[in-house]
Length: 330
Length: 282
Image 1 (cartoon, rainbow over the protein chains, first blue to last red):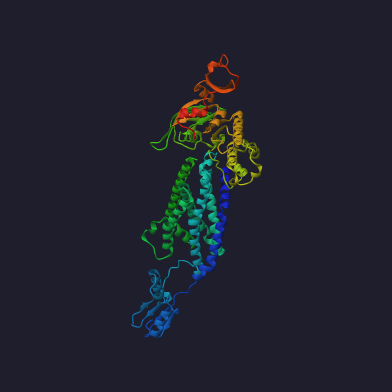
Image 2 (image 1 turned 135 degrees about the horizontal axis):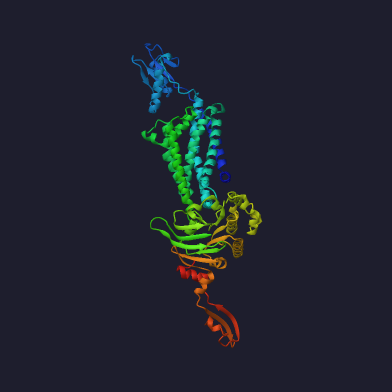
């Protein structure tokens, strides 16, 4: 325990001397500004307008949200001016949906919404999947994305920079002849970065989701943060020990960003969702974090077993490359 | 203290680094392990310090078989000075030593300030980061790191490397002091002067084999031509003559006015190194 405390204290000092905390605080500040002054306002868009042209009056049970238009010219003019809107043309007797073509998924959503307004509300049995206001939803979504990015990209760089520093100074080799268990060297680093990620997650969530909402979701968010943080820290450790210098690491970092993180963000936030994404481990971790933010923590034991297996395999890998580094010539 | 029997080690299938080394190091002895680059010195030291595993043969240290000896209590008894001064550049000398000493029981530790003073470390730099130190100062802190735990067995790899002549003399004095305290020293070096002045015995390693092992004096005497060069003045003329040592038993056997110098033709340890290993010092 005493050895672990010494290692922990030293790693913390290295972290601070590497300006890592300043960088994290800077990112926290920037993210908070972006969420509160940018993203939430951008996402605060009204619902699509629905215009109905029904000269004969065939539709009897329409919702009050529907704008009735009496002439075809006015109907066309409304759609021309309000390009997000959906038109329902019943001029020929049969209702036809008219709108400007956008993304496939979004168009389907608009069509479903417009059609739903044509039925009496009591005849629809919608499944309630959450009770967030649009602003809460936007805040949770973006906070989840930023946290995932921070841990997967920035934290990953942080641990690598600390380890490259120690590698450059050669002090890793000294630890091989000290009366400590070698795995403590790795465990102390993991603990420092895990704690720093958890603190970051708490602050980011408190500042951007709000204290009231945070209390309910925090345990699940921290659990997912912990999983992601340990996986990324171990990956960072392995890469830093295997690669020669920080330049090589930067190239690998770019590859990871392009091939690992980008498809996950695309699949989770856009309509581009390739079939193979379900085999992408980061997709499941990202969705685990997202579900935690929306109060639906993952309860699939297979997911946790997979995460545990990945952590154990990565730890074994880190252990192996650490020994290799220790055995190297001076 | 150290007993090595038929020690072998291979890096991969085709790269055998050690071909059955045999030697012992007695308690309180300074044992020099000398050899050209790639001879297997570092490999041997790494095996003895527990860094490299998977060797063949039998190695015991401090009375224990090495395969079972690498426990925390084993590492508490050894001190290692690496060839390069591996230190935390962002920490000061004092902080480095406090950090590294925190892994040992307090009772066996030496006082950081006293130790640095003994190593003639400049006091102004005590709290400055290592990144601002010269190579010699870093080497002093590294030596302090190796000595701080009062080790029973000290592994020194090129201890005087990077030191000016005064520093080298100081380090030799410190190593002598350690010997007087009863510390066993395993010295790996290219510096033949260090080996000659410090070591009770030296082993020459070449191509993974020990090609000679004896005291420096014996090695030199065994290979001496026993010839003596005398420089003298005769009738105001400077002359030089080489004789067999036995010819001097009855006095100087030639006419002379004044003897200017007498040099024995005993080989140096460096000559022995070249002779045994077939390679010069790099």
